[in-house]
Length: 164
Image 1 (tube, one colour):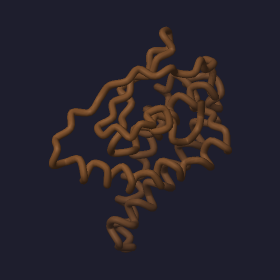
Image 2 (tube, one colour):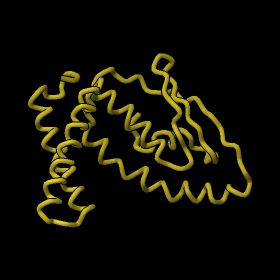
Image 3 (tube, helix red, strand yellow):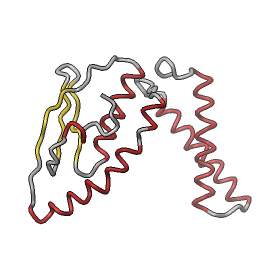
């Protein structure tokens, strides 16, 4: 029934109900029709969607447990997006090649919090149109980052949420 900390059968049932509600609401939003046949078909489609989501949920290898203070910082990459987009617009006529940099990656524990921190770091750094995390080598404690336009602050751009 999935990895430890996922709630077992009760967690899967709760996840199924949650996904059914979300899928049914999406169906109603897209169809914009409350005739009885549409509601019946929507309930069936929502049930299929919920079953598929629970099957995928069972394939997780680790449960992510992010800290609330990390999620509060999620505005930072969004706020930096227009700046980085402008950098690319200005650099477009010059056809710059960009650069690859291997940055030190923090040594994080192999638990739900460490996994959540790794996922958030890579996702936030890759949200920008200018910077992208290629991957992380946990053994060498290195993170490979590609940046199109050099701002001179690649460490900051590779960790916009300040999770290191």
